[in-house]
Image 1 (tube, rainbow, N blue to C red):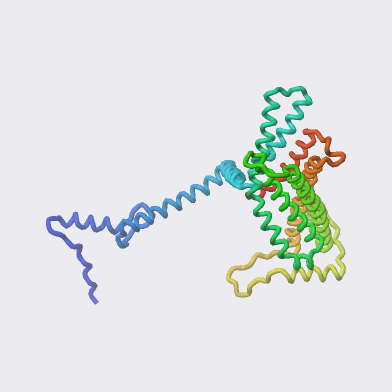
Image 2 (image 1 turned 60 degrees about the vertical axis):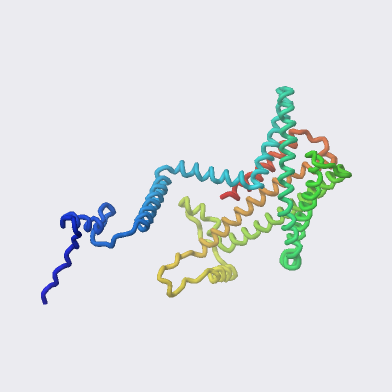
Length: 362
């Protein structure tokens, strides 16, 4: 069969054939993007969309390359973004102001002991203590709404929580009610302090606020100790069931460890944990990652250790905070505390709160 003659390029009037062929070929050939050939002519909208996609892909490649070439710059940008999140959150802003407030109180007392205090520094320290304290009370006025919601949810979950964990629920409920009462009384006491309006029995309202704060802190401390003990018991249980988990750090250094004898009960518990792991799908085209029982137990142990550390630090912050309501209520042994002792306790609790707020921005 004879081959057909390819169609000729149309020629318009008042134009030469060479010019029209050149125009037609320019619309068909694409040079510079790594491909050439006969493709349909794209519209301006399609060309602009493809150019934007190309630019975006190039920008993504350059950004990833910048992170690889300049890791310190990427880390610096991540730190700045976390700092912005901390400043935008009410809790983070409160912790920053609290840290400055109690640090200035401690430094003012140290300067007083070293005879470095001047009237100007004394006035500045008093102004920081008063103005920052009022700012924190204003921020707490808005945070109390969330605390009221938490307390209402605790009351609703009473039956289920009591059947599962009676002691932990009682401590959480006392803590929630204490912080709720403290927030309401503290908000009422803020009004005359800020010069907005006078309230009757202001001294009684302030005293009631410190009482609520004291009860909430006592419940937080006792509940925190209970949580730490329970986490420690769970850690001991995991380490007894999986003895190699406790020896992973030693094995990584190359020391030889004698094999630990496993009883029949422990072997049954290990098999039970292995059965709880999700099975591999039989018809999955992608092979699932093989996770050993010991690796799963090691990840659980690391999570429990992190919880134990965070709970212990929170308890230390509560213990430091309890000094303030005891001193305000003039309890024996706490009414004569100096500004240095109160400032030091405030710095400890503020540091714990800052660490918690900073980890929340990750």
